[in-house]
Length: 191
Image (cartoon, rainbow, N blue to C red; front, top):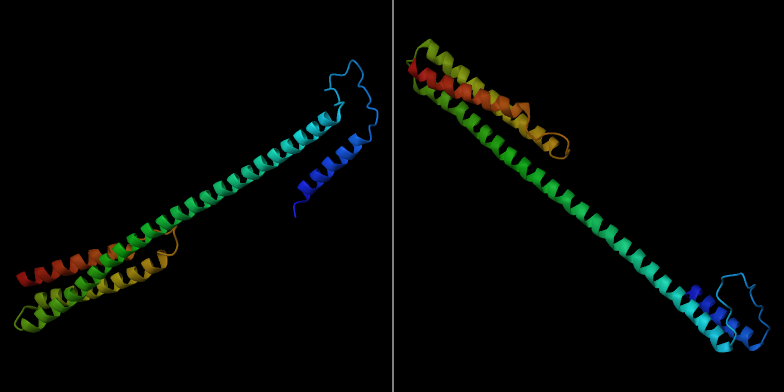
């Protein structure tokens, strides 16, 4: 129940009752610049109704203003959520790309380990330097594989925290060690 409107209606009824009593109205002093008091019953009702209408309009404007402020804050919250969702999605995509790169490095490290082992078995009559280079290339390939797995685990942990970078030193080490292993395996073919 709206008590404000109820009080306004009660106030209007009381003013009508007061006006019907025909109480003598006091005249304001001549130096006062207030609006003259209404003298007739119709003028008193008109003044009361005007006050009620003005109060109702003010209440409606205040209510609309509060509603607009609420809508504005709601839209601001939606915009902030959309920006946060977009930022999280971009970070997830970057993490997926980095994980794909590391999986490729891990696969290359595995192949880089298998190839020198096959060359070591196939080339029975090779020199000791060639065998040492193939064994070293195989060990480096395994190190590259291990570094790629470690980097994948680290990226999984870093993807949750938005302040940590996605690339890790282990991914760089994995790439460098893999390149060294492949170069050493190629060099062993020349020996």
